[in-house]
Image (cartoon, rainbow, N blue to C red; front, side):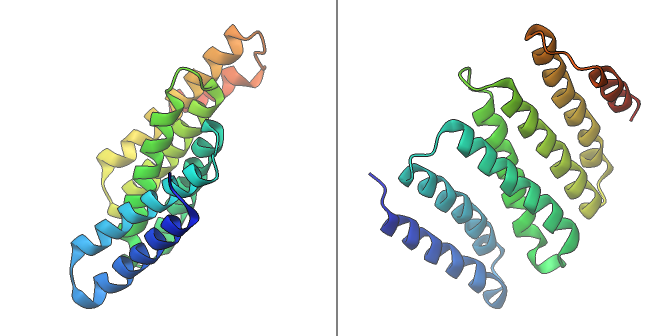
Length: 168
């Protein structure tokens, strides 16, 4: 059973990995630190007994913050924000695909994946990654539209948003 002490220990080890990566010039320490951030987050959610919805929304918020930070930071910290952002977006989509979760959670996960693809693609100046952004945004809209139509709560603006995404 995870405890708060384990979360604190993981956080301290993660911090040590991230701080020591640049002076030691060992890129694998930064990657291990990125994984440590996610391990600490997952363990802390287990300690507080977070619901699936809380876990997904935490990953969505973390990925969105990393996407924005990726665009604003220097090249020294960019790798960490890209790794954590992409992995947390993938985690959000993976959790949201579980059959017991509401479709709106998958919409949020796909939308933040779109944001992440746009941020990473433009930062790395990689057109292939950038091209994933509208595809993921369209997938988010399709899930949203399918849920609203089958749930009987279709909104007038869903068609115009979908057509705009397809045009992009």
